[in-house]
Length: 408
Image 1 (cartoon, rainbow, N blue to C red):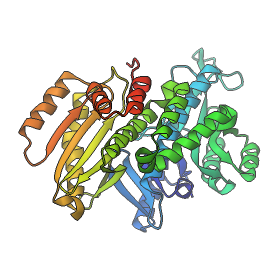
Image 2: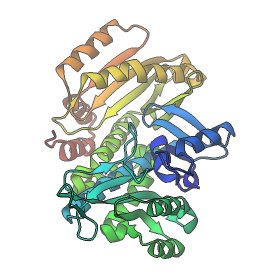
Image 3: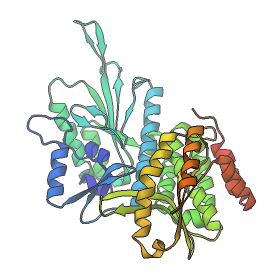
Image 4: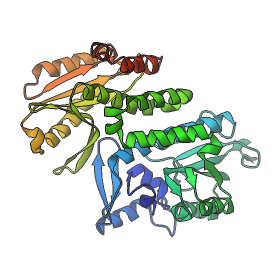
């Protein structure tokens, strides 16, 4: 059910938070990993390594397109960061101890279960005082999120299962649970209230404009190729809307930079695909090409996009990972498809920021010593010149207005 509520495909970290089973051994309960292994043995789910999400879990029968997965992951991460900021400003949680799920490490844990978000809570009635140690012991504020659809009672069953187990355990600190969603049907709202859960509707936590902005964002990223090629004004509109929630929108701004690059390539007459899924049947590894550019009958490019503020830097480890891990996977994909296999291939690393000098030295050395295909890199100034030379003034303005800001 938890897979269905996310469209049939999710990162492994999301499985650990949403399946309703513990991530640490609890007497009488199967671990989330054990259940996942059994489902995989029965061919109900498939598990595959992934260069962006670590591992992907998907239903064998049906699953959402990778574009939707990309859109949902970006939107949910942004909302979790917004909720974190909201909770800190209300003094609902500790200001410095905010825990948000990521794709490269275990999720936040409370009560033996994984959560999409957790933070210590020092509110009266939640906090405790230990007379033996003379220390204040906080409770916790925890939350899960689902932005895929209008959430129903059935979608919430794994969440309630987790909640009931934690509440029935002895020795667990007091906690305040919250479920975050863009839409909840009446059965879901009623059940959340009965279970004494904070109803985290986006329009209530924030406002209707923020909810609408997120819906537009998900729709735009889900159909990124079409919008990048034909409707650059949608990108500009989203960037302007996201400027209101600056800190939380950094990852999303990176995705929109990918669409900006895609529009530039499309405007030059090339056929493009944004966030193209690639797969290596030998290793079963999956990944993405940020912008696949089919120039003509003789040339195809794969552009990796790093959407950063103008003074942020692409580091040497980032450049090395692109060369050693991502390019080989993309090459295998291109060689396995007849429409690309015979073409001259180029792999380019573009950033709206700049490169560390050691990254530049590394990339230049690889560019000079690679003969089978072309390697290139472009920074913010080089990209801006391309836009200006092509008389794509809207793109140039977007780059200046929304990426030329200070960043640590």
